Image (cartoon, rainbow, N blue to C red; front, side, top):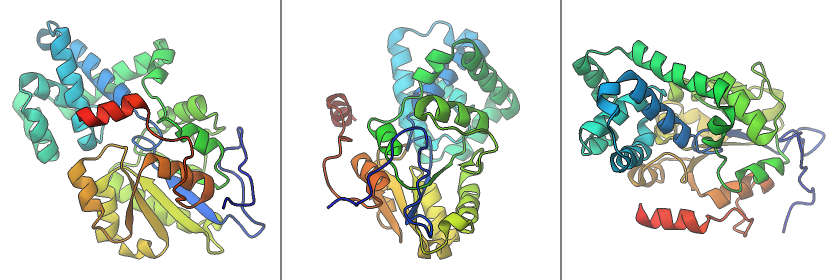
Length: 310
C-alpha cells in the first residue's frame, strides 16, 4: 500500500515536509557512486591528463591498450579519493596490468611510494589533473556533462522524493553545484545549506556532516534519518568511530556504486548497515521504506550483460 501523499515533481526537489511538525524522513546522499556515475569523467580526465603530462609514455598508446587501461581504472575506482590519483593509477596500469590488484589491495601506501619512485609530487599531479578537467568544463561543457551521467532511474526517483534530502560529497562544491543544476534541475548555489561538499578525508568529514544535520530542526520531532553512501570505509568508520550515530541513522551501502564484492560482504556484517540495490534506493526515495515493488528502476539489458562479464 502506497503512502497517501503523492510525491511532488519538478524543481522543488526534496523540499516537501511530510507534516506540519516536520518531515517524517530525511535523506543524506553521497553523490559519486550513488546519484552520479562520475567514474567515466574521472577516468577520462585522468587518462587525457596523462597524455599531456607524460606524452613520452602515453603518446603511442593504441586502442586495445587504451581499453585495457580504462577497464582497469573502472575496477580500481573504489580506491580513488582525490581526482589526480587517476593519473597515478593509469600509469601503473600502463606499466603492468597486475598493478590493478595491487591498487585494490593497499592503495594509499602504494600511491605514496609510487609518487616518490617516479620523482613526482602530489601537488604537480593534482595541478595537471585539475587544469585539464577545468579546461574541459569551460571549453567542452556538453562532453564533460555527458561523462557524468545519473544512474538509470535515480533522477526520476529524486524528482518524486517527498522528503528533504542533503548531498554529502567529497566533490568540490563548484563541480557539485554544476552537476546538480544540469542533471537534476536543483536550484542550489555554493552556499546552499543542503550541500556538504569537499568532504576530504571522507570518513571523518561525513561523520561531521551527519552530526551537523542531526542537530538541525529538520531532523527534530523524531524524523527517521537515512544515509546512503557507496564507500565501505565510511560505513566502517561510522560503526567503529561513531557508534552513537547508529541510534539515529539508518545506514545503507549502495551496491551499484564504487565498492567491491568483498566490501559488500564485509558491510553486511557491520552493525546498523544495510546493503541497498538501486531499485531499492529508488523505493526509499519515493516512500521512505524499501517496499519491494517494480518501480521502473531495474537494470538495463546492457547493465545485466556488463554485470555478467564482471
